[in-house]
Length: 295
Length: 192
Image (cartoon, rainbow over all chains, first blue to last red):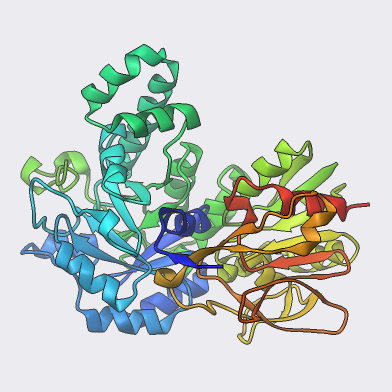
């Protein structure tokens, strides 16, 4: 009886336990407790929510370990934290703190424009953003144990999350119709490892859990993403930039569970107060869009 | 056979797939009315605080307690916490099984592990002596069991990770994450 820690099975396993749940961005221990009380399946500990990173500009980095540790002490649910794309030392620091998941995130300013972190080298699991199947499988090839669609963080506009979820699902639907002899060329075309493409084709879905992220601001947004076929949702700025965070957080949790029940969705959507002030993605200049970070 | 899987949050589809592979009809349970006509129920892994909160908000606690008292029920990981009488913390529990559990007993995700465990009771469904590959994800531990509770599996140091009381089953680990269906068969055997 020898115990094995840090295996891909246990990394992927935690993401499986988060399914059907909501992962919420929090910037203080108080936020974390509000999120936990509202039924969050996990929290993402960070200094600024994406909407503030957008508004304030500057270089966005890993959060202060002191803040992350305080949030870890405040709740019993899993705590995630963000490292910059390619910044493996930030990831090493987060691992040493014992965070439950690292988000190698385009929301922070990338540290490497060519290479992502070699996530196989870590005992803690990673989640990474993707806009299409090729990008998702490249990240899984590097060791990501969970994928989230990128969407466009900090906007409150769900349009990019929808685009990316539809794209990933559409790519998979197309793949499953291909005869086996065409799979190698398809792998080349999307720039993804052949073995993972074959595995995806056989499963008819990504080999790891796939959440939606980037622009989800209402219970209806969360249910929309669930009906499109994702396994759960991340809500960043959408909760704590709204008028009544506790109420909205609880409503989004309920909507994620009862995503197919329009009566319940109507009920939980009532009297939630002001949503976050959104920003239409198509009004944002290209150089301010963040989904294009990473490849 | 018609079996429910509590589908408020967590890894319920994994259980559903194994049960369907064994020929059971599976219902995802989200509301009290979903419990009608079921012969057994699995409460999956997930976050026990999330599952508890949703069960309270959708008036599931009393219907679940009533159903569980008279049926075969199995809780994995978070599900075992939800079934327990005592989780050493204020959170909604079904208070069904006479076990005391400690949440996140092994630590955080970095301490999650997999291990081969001998589980003698599985002999009942399979002649194989093969150990069961048990996957522990931020797992709880069964700290104490009451008189009527049988211990089904322990780690080498004696800490309890699977227990049974009447037709109620609790495991700290996740048989639904493996291809080994012996535990699911063992559960289905408990349904008269």
